[in-house]
Image 1 (cartoon, rainbow, N blue to C red):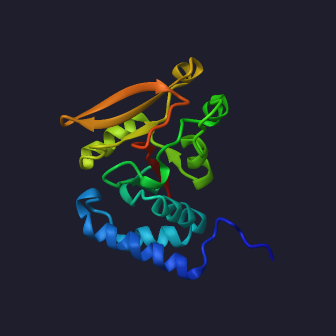
Image 2 (cartoon, rainbow, N blue to C red):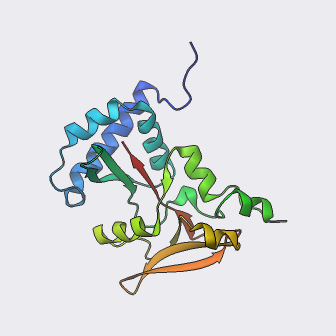
Length: 188
């Protein structure tokens, strides 16, 4: 029998569930009206999603539930670390940008990492929604999903929060900085 690479051993499953439960209970203001037992049951029925949440946690994202989609019945998790996740910084936007760099290439890109982790990079709209929960990225910034017309011209967009306001900026997609990473979302 082949072992699925996106399945955590039982001990790690229990550990990530414990971490998620503790965070859920400590931050009830993020998900008013939701019950942990329902979230846990959904996670236990979707082992590969638990693997993705573990990847989010390992890279410093501190994932937590922000909502229940009443249409699909899916719980929505976002990275809720105060600053852009440490394990996902110093990366360019996507594979095309990574290949375009002639020297001093970063180790990876936001889009590649998100894909490898089984998550989606936040859109600008989702990023703004995130900022209504609490204040994030006061010292860092996060790449967000870039519209095709901007990307086609070589650019990419990122967001941060300064002066109690969410700002959207642009940069060449191949750029990377120690204070810029990305935040992800996952539906379970």
